[in-house]
Image 1 (cartoon, rainbow, N blue to C red):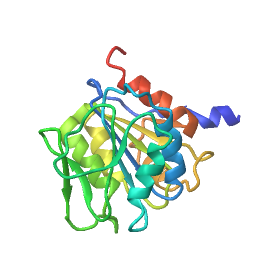
Image 2: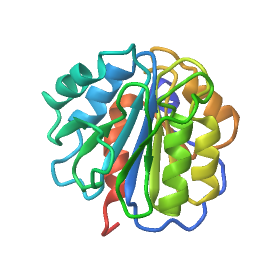
Image 3: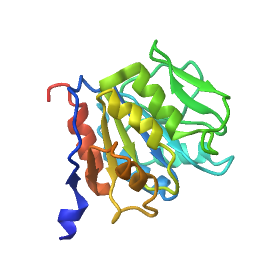
Length: 207
């Protein structure tokens, strides 16, 4: 029963998906450890960039990026405005800035108002990725309190991207992922230790 609950495919329609071009991740409470697990299992040759919004107290993002980078095979950096979105790299949203992407494939940081009380906001990241990359988005919503990300994931879902959620058993707080599942915008629910493997499968250009 535990294994059956750990991984589930939800019966939601899936539009024809193009080649994956970006991975976007949103998380809050319990996120650092979850990110370390997922990012640590991704291969150095991942063919797409990874963008992360982690809700965190001001002043700790640089330390988080260094801590994640200590175990990840991919370089992990705090996002800088105008930086190119290079394959095989992880960019974490900085303090008090929304992380978005430009049509030219570059980081765009904004000072727009907080969304749902958050800046950076997972909603903003997901919606931006859906607008630029359409069906080429693989979006993950991990452990965390509240419902940040749900509205943005609706855009990813509508654009034909793929939405993955962490399951309840492996979440510290089953809030953000649960709200996304309830909203019907999640395609697959997986235990934390299965998410990296699924990301690799979905970003494989030969799949």
